[in-house]
Length: 415
Image (cartoon, rainbow, N blue to C red; front, top):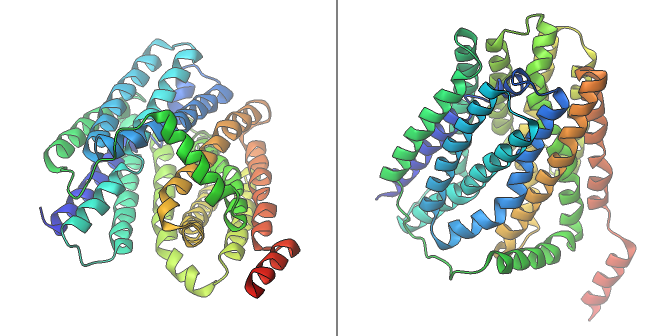
């Protein structure tokens, strides 16, 4: 297998898996509400999905590193097919919330099998086949492919729901995931991969905690950025999924599922634009922490404005602006963290950072869902803005250089 074929296979997998998964992203909240869940319970179900990602990320990472990247990817695809069909069954039977919580957590399990395995497979394969290009360029192509697939999938899912019913996008998703499984089975091979010695999940967890404390939370420049993550991560998931029913409410036709799909597609387009603008922002604004603070404040103003407006068109424009700011912020944050973490511990610390972000979603999503239940979506968006801005003081601490730290560094230099 050549490097070009490895990259082409990676891009194909990104397109088919994201296209399949995003079929429901534009209408998922509407689907949960149609199944009889309240707004609060709908976002509590989403929180159980996030909790599943927190619980299973490390165990599935062990699978990818010991059994293989291909095996992990195939297990993830099979799990998503099964849980998607279970979601459809729960919708048809108007099942009790407890079942939604269990299946949502298992849905999170499916995505954790993907987490890291696909990228690791790409890097292993490119290194083994003598790839001469830049990994940044390879991942940039993947990001663009991901955005395009999400744009097509979310709009397509909304249109399909409009002309049929809310369950059909889930049927389409299961079928497309089956095609994804077939592509991965045929095209993926673990090239350049050396399995780690089989270890216990408990032992792996202990190692991750130790490395994360030493190079993450005990590293002053990294610690505050990681602790700011739960605020922004939790709000981003709520802001995306709450937009579906809220925009339909402003539009005046709660059954216009194509409009809900369009809203998700607009966020996907904003992701592409934000990702493309990240390199420009890095050249203009050299201080990454200041850039992050500015982006959080601006996006906070935008999300608060979404909660205040009564115009559907204006809310759509504000949603696009908010999505663009979030997409532009992510590469800046990644670049900052990677520049302050030793390469040997990079994957471990970044995995722990993902866990912290997901943990924020577990708490924030149901709280905001309950707020929308009681006071409405507009108020919930205003509360979202307040929660997001709480990340700013943590980021400000990352820019400070404590006197004690400065004195220790001076003494070390004299020694």
